[in-house]
Length: 273
Image 1 (cartoon, rainbow, N blue to C red):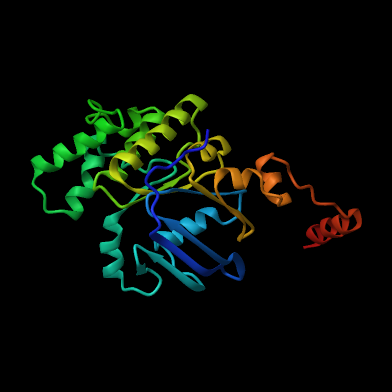
Image 2 (tube, rainbow, N blue to C red):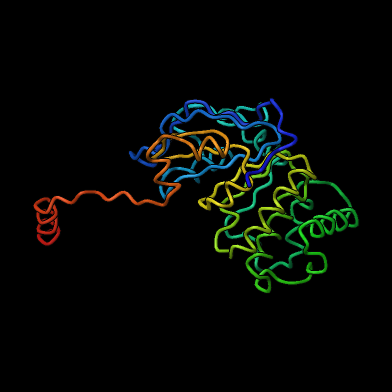
């Protein structure tokens, strides 16, 4: 059953306007316009190469677009100086696709690292705060293990604990369920919802897992080749009359018609060169 949010507000916390991006001469995002509301779980979906992970990178101010505006918590992150982006990122937690824990550090040290780097808290307070977050993600007692000693699901939960250890206003997750079996994936979905409710965060998730998206999303945007196909609630996306949206939801591949003569010419050219 789709997530029914209790605390979604009207205030916009992320606003993307006319966002255009290129990698070299290749157009990646083609004039995107969307907004994310305070307290909601906003899911970004699309096929491979649709631009969903690229959009996430621009929301995190990791790259500058060709043109357009991205505002996060009221701040224009395209044009503001690096020092202001540094401060803004303290309000943002990120759970990367592979967990991205430091392999040479224990789980506990990984969780404590953001507090050590970005606060003036004493060691005891940092240890307590990190332990509380590990408890929230059901990893209490595992702080002395190394990342390599964790299962895939435990690694994802540890990454979430590190992402929320500073109680951010925004949580970004890149493919949180990737590589997990259905039972572990469902448990992780439930954990993300509990964290949202407990910490009052807004959550932005990139995923290709349909079941996960339909379970946790308040709204979904579907991208295709750098364009927005549709944006709306789970029911609105499911009932979209856009053929490409339905192809994605039904996992239908688009077969490109092959011109035999053109194919033969390409083979000959490759052989010659």
